[in-house]
Length: 596
Image 1: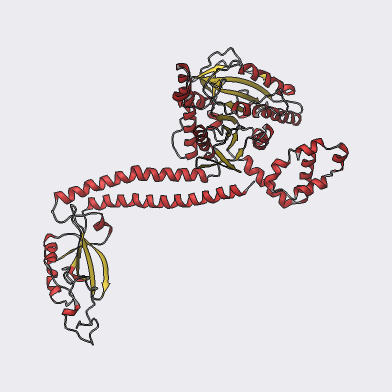
Image 2: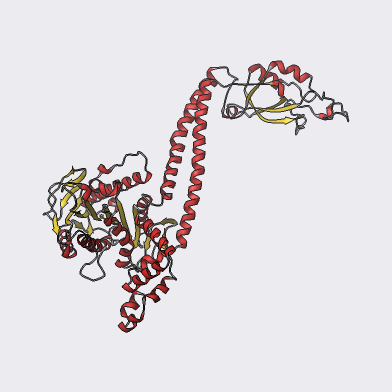
């Protein structure tokens, strides 16, 4: 559509009224407005005309914009165009590699242009700058995947400018607008450009001098870092010139994948002082926009070509690992320590990635020809997508971690404590009065010696040697089932479990159970299981209800068992909650699949 509008004759373009463009808008969804708006001024006029005519649609559009602009983290994936066979499958927001699926805010295939990537970021970054919130715009990926091209591009070729250059252009327009509202008083903008090389901060605009980090007014500041003041009338040209100047000093090296691989993290920072506060040191009136080109992730031990590159790769991977741990800790929430000072990079960017108002925008570049490296990049980027996303991903992660902690830590600890107490009671007390989980989970009983007479007066039961032994040793069992009436007939006639075969009893047709039994005396039969120990099988005995007495476990054992039960219940509830969250996440991903 863009191409047809730009090449159509002016006479035809004049005939396309805003009413006709408003008709086009009727066939679009609210999610399509974001891509339709920047095509041309005619599209913008048609969209405004249509929204003014439909208040309901306007509210939906405002809600959609609010949901987009209030995202704390936005993560997109950009696939480098290559002619070789791809290792991945892309369906809308889903990208699959070797059977593993990932969902991101946006996935750009190899045909995506710099403008298309920027159009996704522009509304969110514009909203962030208008609210004077610090933001971090970063490019990440395997070396040679095109992340530096995505971040900076080629400013000399129209349309090939990267995210950083387009962000500067948008910032300049915003600040000029702000100055007009303030009667010509323009905000002050300064640029600094540094690299983090082997955990040291080097000034790319100041002859690569070292700048140790320090804290000033609650913010991390590299000492002695060069700052260039920007003229808002020529801010884009100035920034491009200074970035090119600094990039020439950046450390690069030849690797297996890229002959000009970045060996450091480059951080260009725009310091915006709005000029409407009393003190220059008042940080509430200062906004920072970080433009970060992260060094290429790599398997240092496998791809390093020298000892120096091995050291560089180790430090690169360390800072990336700490950055991932910081984001993971923030995504999990709670009172977990956030290790921002474990790496120079994370400490430097702490106010952009860890503050309550910070916004992070990441584009992860991948190469479709390298499955292993692509999978590693996607997993790393997925950590960011959980941080501040629609909290389902984070909640699933938190629930998974809670279940893992209960299963691998709390439950074994409670089980060991229970086993220790159980061992002391079973083998330091009476030998036969042994307890186990089965007797504690059910109604624990023991057969009394006094109940032998009850057996003698009951035609359905007989006192056996097994009953005598269990009663004499006060062995603890548990009730497996209770039957109202006589017990069921045994499966075999040779079973000596206390039941009497009815065929051996005198039959009476007028008796309720086939034999005479006083109607005034209720009959209840109990099946009692005595668990076997040391590899022996369980013993099952039947007896009338009055033949057993409740057995109480020692207090210490009851307390240990109660603790074990509570942990098991928490684990069961956690796994149930996790299953529900996973189902909700699956449904959400399915909705994403159906969206454009």
